[in-house]
Length: 142
Image (cartoon, rainbow, N blue to C red; front, side, top):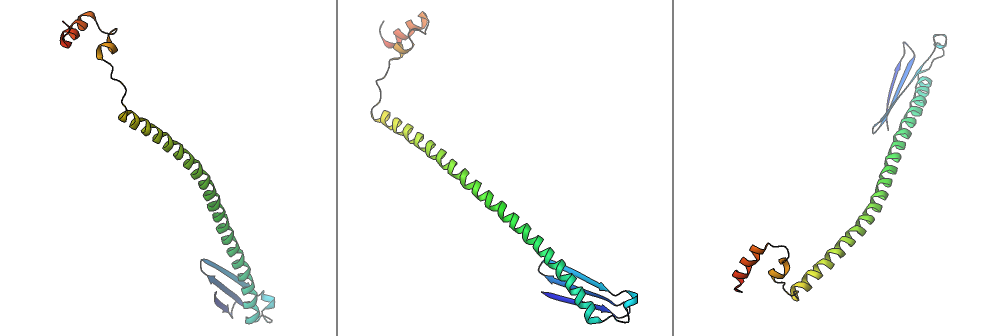
């Protein structure tokens, strides 16, 4: 921790600045006019330093509390993220299993294809009589 001391003999005013990292605190002490004949540089600087130290510790504790709050938020986020990841993994497993089952069905059908259905049998009731005749002609039944 760095300390910067300043004392004015004319005004009997002491100022101490404490700096450590991002935390900076200033403490001041001034003797009243009726006490000037008793005022002492060392006493003024000591009082100013105590005031600066109180401010410094207060600022540093507030900074630490902010860091603690941020870490708690991060921990909560990670915990929630882990729960979401577990749910997402379960969903991915289900989707993957469904995909594998469909692929297996596809491969079974490729190896053992179902019997082919003739076009006339499939669409016989849906076609007009004229079109049926044309189909019969093209099939060579006429």
